[in-house]
Length: 541
Length: 44
Image (tube, rainbow over all chains, first blue to last red; front, side, top):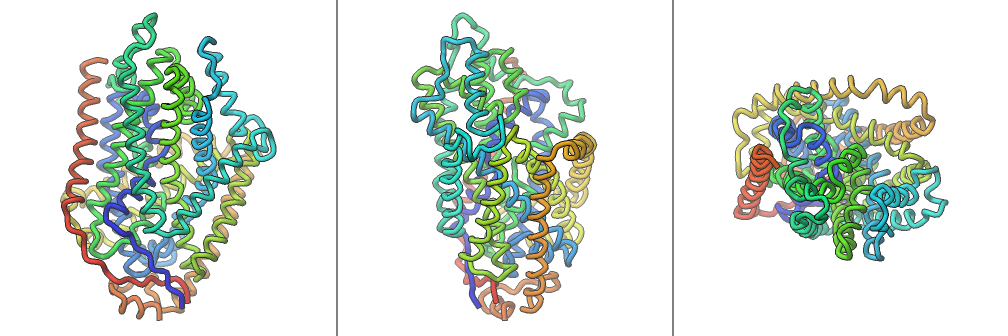
């Protein structure tokens, strides 16, 4: 019998790894756009409500369930939810917790490769934006670069002139796999311990530059830093009466914190019994908020406003996350003069770090799942996982037109299924496992206590809040999404890929279930965990 | 930037910076728990 012992090296290590998983492109690009479009400063009221009543409590539940499952020797969402949820239904629903990170990784490393490619371009002299040309032409140059090198114009980014995208993807993917293969402590933890502080330094450098821009164009005195901050932060209280604002805030918190993603439950399973999950969960959430509000809320829109003005901002915000990041900001950097290339390189390197600390967290749950369900060595499981990922990413890169293929995976897996998994998790924790038992487990080794009012929040408020947001989300999007799938073959292909991967994961769960039962493991969570080597040896007899 | 804009921005920044610093102070001043020997099941 082969054993694979994995554990976090330090308490700080797991926090930085989970924070790294949460901090991504959305913190710097999606959050400011959402805030500006939904009431500016007033957006922060529903935003912080969602953080306190949705993000943090579901996060605590995930951390606690993960560590509990780890004490029984399990490390993946299907096996851990089987233990917490007391049986097969929860176990098979837990497959979503492996599917989400795996399927999202198909396109996430592709986007991550763009960040590295842009960083390289800035180090090599920039995108060639002509400062003398009108702003519209400058934006067109940035858009043309983006469209060409991300394959948006036609399928086949692998075969066209944008072959360099493939080169950067190979580099990005190889680094990811190498880090994950090195293991929890030597790979993921060590890298995040370097990458998170480096990301903070990069963000601070860009922030200082942006806040000291002053009024770069004397002919346009309104385009200054203070008005840029005002664009993002001036509150419009009327927006609070619009349910869309509350929905957008809850969605932003939800996706930003990586709850319901299947990563926290996996990462927490490598914690020791006496490791603190309450303070760790809160610290990881706080770190994510620091990057999102403290950096993302000050940098992106302020810089864009100073150079593009109010009229340019409307188009920039309407362009969404990728329009803002890859079309608008290159124009902004070009306006910073010779120093702009340095700031551009630092900015895209920071985005690359934000992306890679997230993407490595997407591979680990799949790897752990394949190992424990099939009983394979780390090397063999890595080979299978890499094969699946290369196949999935190849399809994403080949069918690159308009980002339709990967956008469909993002909609159905990276958005819709996250709601479903979070709902399964909070119901399993608060209602099936039992809130008293769950909080007792959470407080094991905890430096701080979960405030008493969170009993009510975790049992009633969070599930209800989630249900309302999910229902509103479905009402708003689901009809259009289904119609779009029926109309577009590329979308059908993307969902076919997702279904094929789901079938494979369900099969692995079925095999694992038989193996775990034959080995006498408590896969339905009928006994309290017995910690220590002796207990584990007993369980693996 | 209006006065209300300043208030919202400064309160939001104070909240996230305050919470983060408080959490890291707690984490860094706590003693590490003793190492445990663990063996995890993967294959039979």
